[in-house]
Length: 296
Ligand code: FES
Image (cartoon, rainbow, N blue to C red; front, side, top):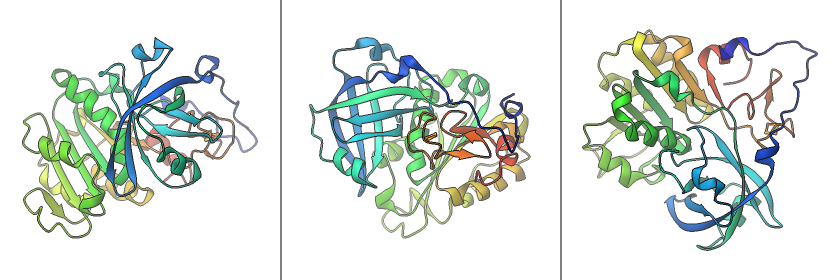
């Protein structure tokens, strides 16, 4: 069990991980991009010369390190699914110098790519289970990888429930795709916005994402797993709702990416209670989280 994996000694500094295979950047070409919200852009990339990445196997919830020649490197979660080979996609928020530079890139421009890094979601544990995905804001980016993975293998899973909370309608990522899924019988999808839902009352609930739990009816807590990613404030309240449904703490998976800088266990920026969230995470069970102070 992952929650038994760490030694919580006050004097123990974790060993830095090495993955030489992943340290060599692969050049990727941007083949398309579009704005998902006022400050989040979607990038589709394909390998240029090294076709190893055409068969790249990664897990939903893992991330890659993107680099631009002369402008540095930063980690970003993968938003595409390993079930759709050959194309790797990212949804990136413009928040600093590196991402500002990324936003100037055009179709055909090159990016360096290293990875995949982190543990990702252990989808083997999800097989045969009902699944509740809860996304807040940009959390819909890594969770899109999991969502597509499950939709592409739907016969291997039970109910698929997706609750997505956004601040407002403009910031809903993949809005067109989500609106299309609202009429699908493959998924029970509910969307909420904190602010005005004017014009979308039939599709979007106005209120907190936690209010969407009232719409999902009864669940079988012994055969359900939950995956959560969103702003830090969201985790506590969403977990409370899941615990009210009698879910097991080991069946609640949280993707915690917010403290990452280097993404590969070098800078120490993401260490919490002597755990590298970039290497040991970013996905933790709620049981793991209870053992780590300040994780959420
Ligand atoms: S050690 Fe740098 S982000 Fe984890």
